[in-house]
Length: 326
Image (cartoon, rainbow, N blue to C red; front, side, top):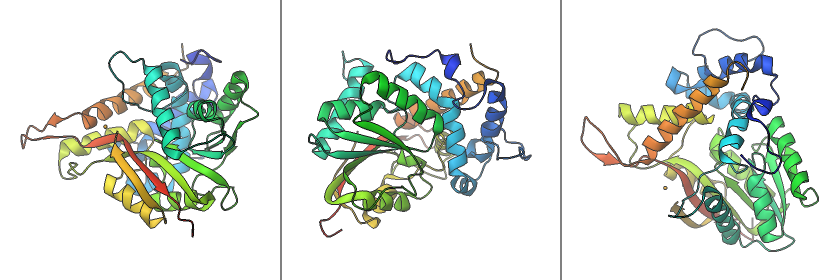
């Protein structure tokens, strides 16, 4: 849990959802019933782990992702800190040190310089944008469509003394409220995996980025080793999607092609491999995600065909440039 502005897990659980409504929100996220909840779709109904359909997840992605982060954000911050992402961790290195190194790497790859105007796409509660702003002396805008995460991020900015250089905008990253050629750099850390259409998302990033400037991203991807006809692989993929609010997990090749189709030139890429009722179920689907993430990232043995594969990475990194003629 972050020490700056640390909150009790129970006090923040559910985000903007009232404590009395947490259980029904979990029902919306997780129930595989064919019934509909008045005013919205059930969350678990969306997911393949419970028989949900990918097209439903994509068409209702805003509702699905918002429900997920209203339910999960306090658990994330309590257990992980202010930066909700993975990082390689060296022997003897703390979790916080690895997270900071990961964020500094991103800033260095983008060539950030003091005074630059930067966009963080899908910024969570703003842990990375605060660290990158301090490290590079830039002004960073966080784009997020979740009301609770933005309110939490603004409070953390205030406590960190960064309200003057870091801000938040509530909007959908498929329809950004910025003029063309606004930002000197754009990055996304494990966030655009929530987009229902990667080409559309990358095109919006391309539009708001100045010509000649760069976009850096860490994507959640399935690798070339994933076999859609393998039941174990399919189960792992479904668990990751359920526990992380994802409409689908795309392949590395799909993401790479999407950023090219959006108009970018790819410069570099690599694998970097007491609470209200309902809280226990939120914890359970997060644990299910963890099981899928670990199993998907491990070199695991398939009992049927006796082969070993790595089928998932949360850190497929690429750096892309918008041409000067863009």
